[in-house]
Length: 470
Image (cartoon, rainbow, N blue to C red):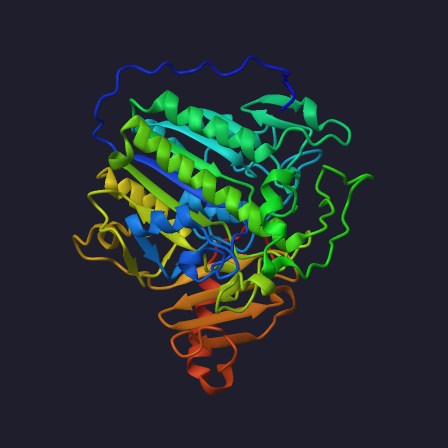
């Protein structure tokens, strides 16, 4: 690998490791895959390839079958997670960009999990994709309670796995091997190594690590030694090459590169992700802190159909309808696994309905802390530990601000969806207990439920000057 050039501000000092000691507060690692579908793991039914390390994580912990992302796209899903508020209330509700790089910033005074955990004695790190505030804005990670950030600030830049630069807090890191048309520095390797260093440097104190890998969204490019073993497999022999951006104005700034064997490349990328999850698990064992670490694995939304990706071939959305940007189940229902040795019974699964805005209050519940009333999430700690009474949501709400606007509510087994909010689209109604694939709209058969959901849609969001449906 070629030399990486560090340019700009001084690097963050390394925290020296003192002799290991037992900490009372559990570490929290939240691994967030990017556009990984409900069916993209073998423990959730994937048959074209296997994910042995993530499967092992599931065997050691609890697998959720009815878990939901914060939204159907990246930035709002992340905002929902850190604030504990759904998309009707969280500050960032869409993927609005700042030029030349980054997304619209989450306000500096926003309360969220990073600040909460810092106040409670945790070291905090984010490694991967940020997407909640462009460099030098109030939403940049170093301004939001993140002690150390390394990766992509901008979601669009994270489309490319051989970027010309990454960010270490406020410092722009030029990747010499990737200048011009070079592909010498594979970003997922660099980011992963920094995340492992963070664990090394903070193993003697409580830490929160948000591992926001860009895999598998969306460019299907990776080192040849990773993809070669998959090209010869029988299920990947019939391939249609993808012709993408290999030069021009969008090359390495959002355009997806070409790929001769997109199916094999996708399987290889998930293999890299699976291996890296295994290496995180191994690192926790090496440092002697696995038993004191809550490890969560999930995805920010459903599978995409970009850059040559083929979710239908892989059955990436499992039994569900829809993809990324959809508010049907395939766009928002995601894999969700939690391991916490000694607290979570291994090899278990649950049908408890949970969503991204529940994670922050669950972590607070673990620490015995109360959050203010602006946090809408419901702690699922009783479901994890089997102790106490699990409170249920009255209903779950989502909104999406592209393609005419979309809204959805799940209440019990009923799901109401509006497409074309800006043009006053009609309510679709599905009974998920009888029709999990949302194939039969029963709105005409249940006018009383349609009326009930109409009222819920009116009261489920607070106005946002930036994010509206006009």
